[in-house]
Image 1 (cartoon, each protein chain N blue to C red):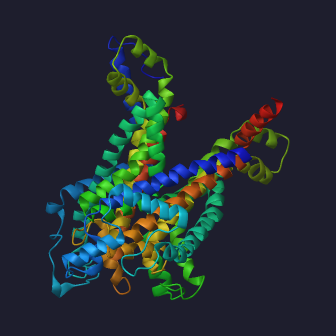
Image 2 (tube, helix red, strand yellow):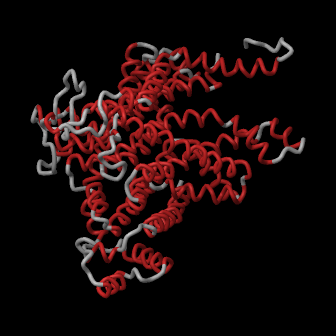
Image 3 (cartoon, chains in turn orange, brown):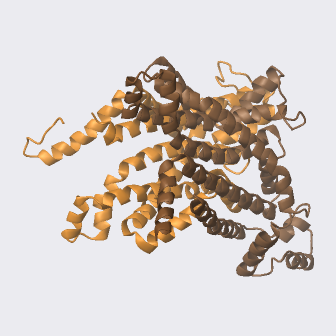
Length: 294
Length: 319
């Protein structure tokens, strides 16, 4: 171990070195760094799309429909003459937001439910786990279909449908790590100095259960983007003319024979986004895994 | 073993009931009046009221739930479609085999390619075979299945004209592209899992022993290592199979294969709630059965579970 506690501010020094250590391990993993960079770029492009995109996403040009990729339109234009590159740039606002918001909600809700179940155990644990069993007995995509069919299509409903489906996985994972942590001596110490349950869970238990949660969230955003695209594709997610990537694929599929660029570019974009998140998730898992430390 | 199987079989009953109640409740809150959907907006208030009474929709939540559960358990009846008045369970049973065919052959492809890919990666850890296999696997989990399907149609059906682009008119040939498209995600997951569990096993002492006694490398890998590495892979394969059943729903719509997915999408577009509800309940019960199958396979391949139950049996016998 480097940075043994030699300075008077030893505790602080060690804490920051831990983070640095993880960052250092992550930095050594080239795929993870590439994934992180691509995701940051995609997010920035999505945020600044009104200034970066060459055209408005909904600007139609009926004299220039189905244009193949040209210098003016690098990804070509769609059935209404809208610039596909601009639509993809704007679309990131929807696709990435769906992934990030739904997973954040699911992670927070799941972590809360899982902590309660794992920490208190007993009847509340039994009840929560049985309910989770039931929700998890429904395949994720099918549950998302059922919820969207009830709520109706749309951006917010799509997020709700996804979040409900993923919450049990987060709850289960948090519960498992908390069951491990509960046996640790530092919890006994906290209990013995009369710390409140809330304080113990929020200050001692959750931070130690965090690393699997971070990895799962990264991968979860990737899965959520894929499921959201599937939902939009079968007409249940975000509706056209909103330039969500899955909705763009749904709109372009009828023209695939003669104008394949309508489906190739949005699909490749989804793939790159998901691929980067998966690479980052893999890297984070290795960086945070204490078993792999040398 | 018998006791374990019975215990697991019994555990599925509350889950199946819970799932049905949950789906029913979600669907119960769907806005919109079924009678208006069936009769159209021109129907008189009288007609609408009569239709709702006919469908049993004028009753309360508990009564309707009880009716639904009763019909499902006693008659395996999921109600009648709003659109064509046909039995939902009959329609589902007619269409489900097609979805199952896609999922079954997809998992077969995924296992047959995924496991060797994972072994090759683990055996050649840090060499080019490892990198290639893992890059293939990363791409596999990152592509939307329905998009892969579209790309396969574009290449093999539209450009090369080798395989049919849609329908099931060509028998099994019509299933080739859908199965390939559907297998990608599972293939990648299985390859990654095989690799990581092989890597764990390969460092074990008994592998060193096997090598030290001069065992042929092929036998070491396939007999000593793979058998022990296979347990988590089995779990992953069965989970993938469950996910493929879901994925097949979307992929069907690309190929217009009249399976459960197309049925659900049609039902959703025409707001045919008994059909949606029936399909979701049916899929969930099938999914639970697949998970049950996983536990049973798990008990079969993992000697620790087997011995646990054998021991307890012996103890009962002693007493």
